[in-house]
Length: 300
Image 1 (spheres, rainbow, N blue to C red):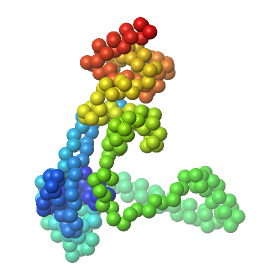
Image 2 (image 1 turned 60 degrees about the horizontal axis):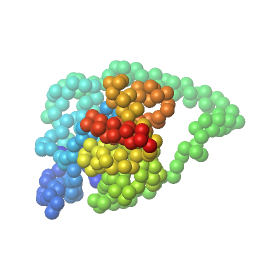
Image 3 (image 1 turned 180 degrees about the vertical axis):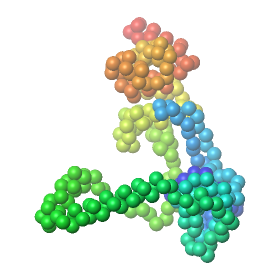
Image 4 (image 1 turned 135 degrees about the vertical axis):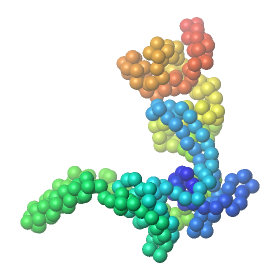
């Protein structure tokens, strides 16, 4: 069973298949129930505190499975299913499970309990309220003159500012399969430009993303061992290198790794991006580098 969503490759969390073979690179070839074969590549998971990545793993998004839960079946459309609802415990579970199957001929129900087919009374009440309000609005709209109706429609569309928010739909290729070179993650795109010798500002411009996003990518790439700290130091602006000791000291005195307290302490003197870059460069084991840099600045 697949454990991650990848619509481009044609699988979602809960898709079932059979491992038929392996590629020369050691990647499994999985045959889905519709007979389509997929080469499965490692996927990435990361744990973040909202500011920085705390942990990261890369593994195949597969696990042994003979069935899926009702929860995992949400959003799927399947030809046949054997369903057991005898232990259903939440409103709507029965509907979700039974509505996955295209036709009754493909549905095999082993059992069910009362809860599996019940509807939450709060939902019924809210739905009734919506319907009643809709009928009231229908009557009000019908009683309006053509001129008033046109005026209201025009005012509504003006508020939506349709012209500036509606973009042409992109054409989706009929064949969603991609080559390995097209599957590069956003981190790998940044890493590729970094290895070309491009700086943070240049990468942000080329990729059309913010400097903060680029710095976040570099932080994670450092954690994965793909970018060395000395590379970041070498690419850091002179203003940041001259401020290492001051900003690093603020982190230590405040006893935090969060950006906001340090930003507040300097009252906007340094941007969030600058503070974050210093946090990456000045790890706990880099105090000597900060001291040496401070001595160099004094000698200048």
